[in-house]
Image 1 (cartoon, rainbow, N blue to C red):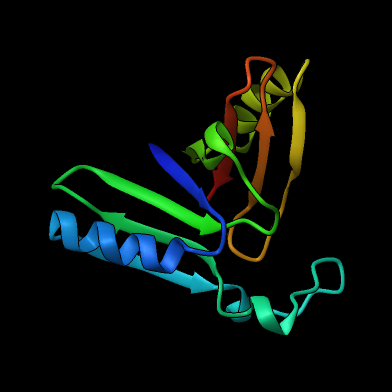
Image 2: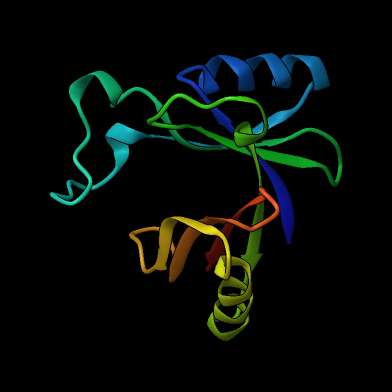
Length: 134
């Protein structure tokens, strides 16, 4: 499944409520950074615990958007990425290896507390891809 993933500068919660109102949509999920299990490799400052780690909003019968607050200032095209949800680790690794060639890895494709694999990469054309294997 492929869904647009919107990255925000500390305003994801406000934006998703606005989009929910605009489309009479349904918020499917919303997790905050403070909901994550503690991880010394990914410390979360007290001031960031209320920021959105992940949100999903159903806009139409088959249309969804997802989003989160990024921990760095984002501009223009960096605010949108393509989220690819796959069932096969092999399929994800194959696509990942092609897209990272000549690109920039933002987060390595690796196991996380919420998925078998998760990572993001900006390809050589400037498109950011976010992979999740459930």
